[in-house]
Length: 88
Image (tube, rainbow, N blue to C red; front, side, top):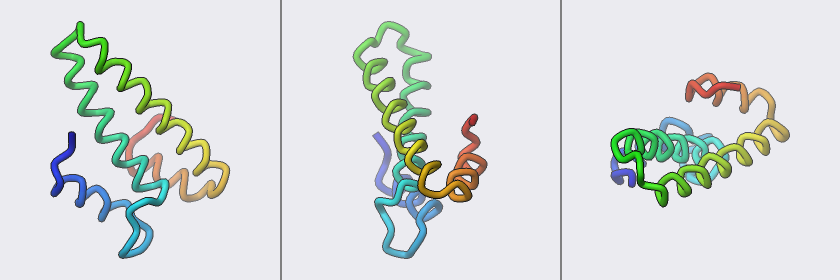
């Protein structure tokens, strides 16, 4: 899980307006942090299959959000991919 201060910083770095907490950019950034955290956990705990299933769900959700963002705003999509260092 993300610490509240860390989560708030991620939201501030990726929001579109001062009150934005739910735009696709913010959601993708938060999912990316959780994916990185779970990936590091699974490197240590190779047999934790429940967490592995959760990781796959998060990756799928991020993939759907990225597809939505690409469809709705190509320039926003490209900026986010570059900012978060995601492959695409």
